[in-house]
Length: 386
Image (cartoon, rainbow, N blue to C red; front, side, top):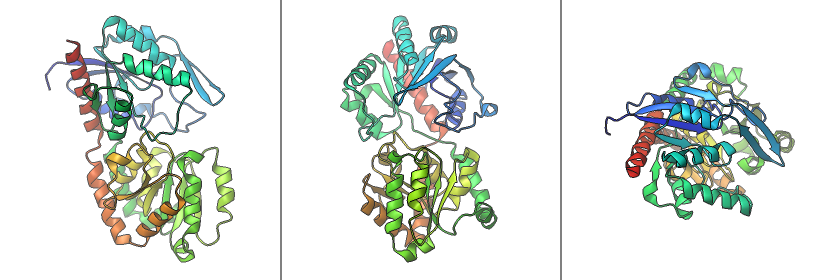
């Protein structure tokens, strides 16, 4: 890339612990002078994440905000968007969404000054979350006014193409987690497997789900698929749910009616606690109805797990190869899910080989690769502006 340094301002909702390594990597890029504008520190009603400010190496600010939920919709209002951008003086803006007033304010600020405005878009055609006609109209208007788009993979690219966006305006920056952190922690967990399994009261073998316990993640289908497995298989392989959410009570009530087998509800686990659950599991199962990507898949693969994944997940087209590092199944299909679980659980040697393939695949999905993709998109968008 040219040696020019571009001042890039990223606008995104909250300080997500999973994004900090990406922003740190981008901050170290020789061609990027980075500044982050967060619309809020966190969203405590939806997420129990810790805010790891001690890990932040980039410059940032959190705008004053007011958040309210109205009929299931998340309204977040901010003050100071224009001021923050004027101080940052960006050569380009990367915005993580179009559903906040601050996103529109930033778009108009950029257009008025001729600054390239890129949308960080993860939506895909499989995503069931659709808005009203008015919302869809606003979305189209927002997309039409953007200078370019940054996507994590094929599903998001196809979504934008379906909305009439030229492929020449779309740039790829792979979705990533801190692979090194997860793989190092997985190695430590493996060395202490017996002790950890005892401390965490985990079955000797188990299927693993990690995520919010909400119906659209396919958790009730997962429980139904597990309960349909042969009793001997359930006795040998348990089912562990790591996460919390509004559907937990109903899920636990249904689980109580399942006969033989071990079903465990761990509750919410922080980022540093997850590698132990991944490492000791047979496989990750994510039968979601709708997921823009699914970063838990990245995490599981970095820990060496095969994955059973719904084709509705945005990451499926990029991270999973059928029967190589997992299996891809249709959403809401209990029979297909049970078949995949039965197949992999009955072939532990094949499972182990698939886990090694997962490590190989996910190595290319690193914070460094993400930062390279973003840097290329910024440079290209500036060159197009002349």
